[in-house]
Image (cartoon, rainbow, N blue to C red; front, top):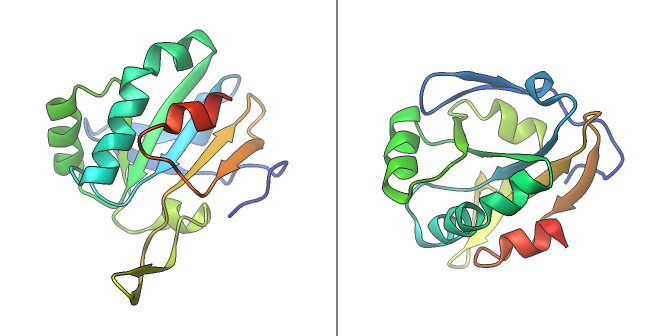
Length: 148
């Protein structure tokens, strides 16, 4: 994981609507940048819905929320519409953002080691500095992990 206190790596990615998001777009605002493995899977849906249900708390505290996975923009659009997510989801099919944020690597699943998305969340402050890094995400109570 990236270290708290370091500058967040530059990123640029396209969301489910075809809009480009860059780290610089969030200068002067706090950003929750969360990485998740796959749209519409149980854990990823729990995590997204927890963030959705508490989105008003993020907004009240001056945060923007962005999700990133390697799913396509079309998949993100279906996921976002189905669960009425109020935040955007970036498609990172070439793994550029995932690798820059050390959210891609070896993981064990069913006793096998594979490469994939490491469920990770970074909180980035107004100056683009990482102020929190969460590697052991509780998908059902992720908001509490971020805001407490």
